[in-house]
Each structure stands twice: as structure tokens, then as C-alpha cells.
Image 1 (cartoon, rainbow, N blue to C red):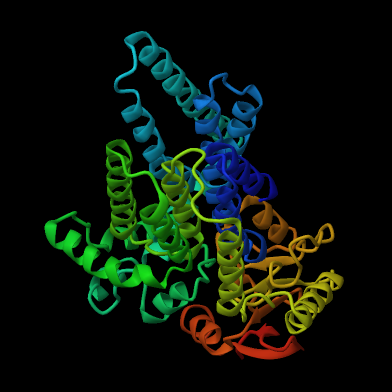
Image 2: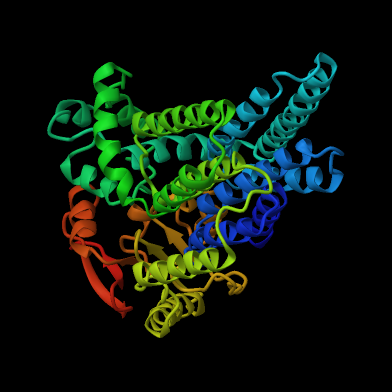
Length: 469
């Protein structure tokens, strides 16, 4: 985050070459720093880092003498963003092509030789970046070639599609669900994110559920529905207002030449396509995704400002910056205290539960989703002690199906967590919704099974599940 925001500030000040640019950069960085530093999330990090890296690359290739240091750091930041989340990297790259279009439009009127040299430099630089991320992709895939990791990738792919984009409605597909062995209780169990009944919820079953979903088609009706919804919901995105503020600056003090207007029309079309794709894909207007997107679009608009022009006096710039900062502090007043005393107390309670579980090495704890949580127990810069999860067997999420967690569970004789917890003196079930868990167990495994509270962790409890008489 620090390197990325420093790079963005550096590029904007060097690119605009005016005192006014300091205040504009301050507003931009202050606005997005809240999202980057306080509400830390890896997709946001991927977006901000990718935007900074690609912006730095554009700056490096537009200097009279190409900056090798800027190229290297731009490549490193861009690749880091790709490794965090490749989809976010490509979304940022798609939006930042607005700068590329602007640079190509500016080539008009230059002598042919100079045009060829710059085209070679532009396409060579970004072609090299594309080659680098392709190599990283191949290396990453080679790290997971074993059978167990291939099985994980297959299961995680279908799991992600179902939980990110939604399950087909049960009442509309009841017969098909029944053929897959999924009754209403099983459906509710799956919808609670607890999918680790390895016998009933195997990968073939989940793929069968995924196949029930109606295939989407990009029709004019879908586009109209998107535009109608987007026009309203976009105003609920906090970072969009920073972009609007920069647009006001551009209207008042920006450069309004043909190249600038055409480039920004292209940028508007790129935003339309990126959001239309997200709407079509079913993951739409998510804060963690939007942060990087609107940072990229804001940088494109700022790139088209006239070089060396003073947009407003120093006092006006300072007043604008302070006003925006005060508005942000007021608008985000509840979130600024995300690590306040009450939150730290909650973390301490969650951490004490994990520590109690860890100390009980004689038992394995089969944990339902929304119970044991490491990210709700430790702060960003806390180091989680080694082997804290060695006797934890999660029932849902991507971690549950990783070979590491599966191998840890097998040391306690757990292969099917929901089945193997029944009548097992070495296993406890941790859940905040024991009614659903017992309904599922009694329906599919042991009609007379009973749950006895062993530990009370507050919002959730640990139970010994006893066999029926």
C-alpha cells in the first residue's frame, strides 16, 4: 500500500508539474488510503497495487529518457497485483488503457520514425508485462500439479461458482435436486456454507447443482436492466464520489482538447464494459472490487490535465483538501474506529476460544462456518502462533477442502467431518446453529443423535454429538 500510494503521488506530481497537483494528489491518496490501510482486503490490495504499477509504467515510457527504475518498480508492482488476484489486475489494466488511447492519439502529427519508436516502446513494455504475468501463471499452476491439489482446484472452482453466484432455487428444481440426493435439509445445509459432508456433497454432486442454473445470455434486455440499476446503485459507492470530484476539477481546469475528450469517451466506454461484465457474471458493485477500479479511472482523468498549469491558488487547494478530509472523517466516522477498544475486546474473546481449542490436543474440533475465525481473532500485523489450527476441521469455505486441513483431520480419524463427529469421543462439533446441524445429522445419519454442550464460547458452542439409543 505504501509503495503504491507513493508511486501514484510521485507520478501525478511529476506528470502535472504544478503546485496544484500536490493538493489533487493529496485528496486522491487520502480518499483511497482509508480503503487501503484501514479496511484491508486482498482484492482491494490487488486493485490498488495493480493500478499503481501500470500507472508507473505509463509514466516511465513517456519520459524523454525512459526511466529504468520506474519501469522495474512498475513491473514489480503490477506483477504483485496479478499474484494477489489476477481478475482484478486485468480489470485495472482494461481501465488504464484509457491512458494508452490518449498516448496513441497524441502521436498524430509526429514524424513517422518517432511514431514507430514510441509504438515499439509502448507495445514492447506492456507486451513484456503480459509475458511476465503469463510466466507467473504457469509457475503458479506447476506448484499444484499433485492429484490432491488438482482435486482441490476442481472442488474449489465449483464451490466458488455456487457460493459467489448463487444456488438454483430448490422449489423450482426440487425433482432435479432429489435425483442428486439433495433434500430440503441438505439444501439448507449447503446454503449455510457447510459443505464438508464428503459423501453427500461430493464434487460431482456440486457440479450437478451448478448445471441446474439457467445459462445466462447477454441480451438487449440484460443491458437495459444493467444501465437502469447501475445509474442508481453507483451513487452508493464511496470511491465514486472521489472520481466525481476529479471530474469537476477537469471541467473547471482540465485540458479539453480533441485527444482528451476522445480518450475520456473511451474511458467511459471501458467502465461500461467492465461493469457490464461484472453484472453479467453475477458479482456486481462489490466494494473490494470497486476501490481499485475507481482509483484507475481517476488516474486516467488526471493524466489528461495540462502539464504545468496552476488549477487553483495554494490557499484554495489547501482549503479544498482540508474540506474533503473533514467530510471523509465525518462520513466514515463509524469505520475509523474499526480497531477501537470494543473491537479489540471482541478479538480477544475470539482469540481466547481459539487458544482454548488449541490447548485441547486430545480432541479435534469440527467447526461450522461463522464460528472459529482467525481474521476476527488477530489483527493485521499479529502473527498467528504456529500450529494453532492443527486440531481444527472446518466444515466450509475454501480452507476446508485444502489438502493441509484434510491431512490434519485425518490424523484424528476424520474423513467425513459431519458423519465422523457422531459418537466420537475425540471429536466435538462447534456451531452457532445446533438446530440445523442436528436436523441434518438426524435426517441422514442417526435419527436419535443428541448434542451435549461441552464448551460455551459465547456466540457459538462446542458439542459432543452422541449416538442414539
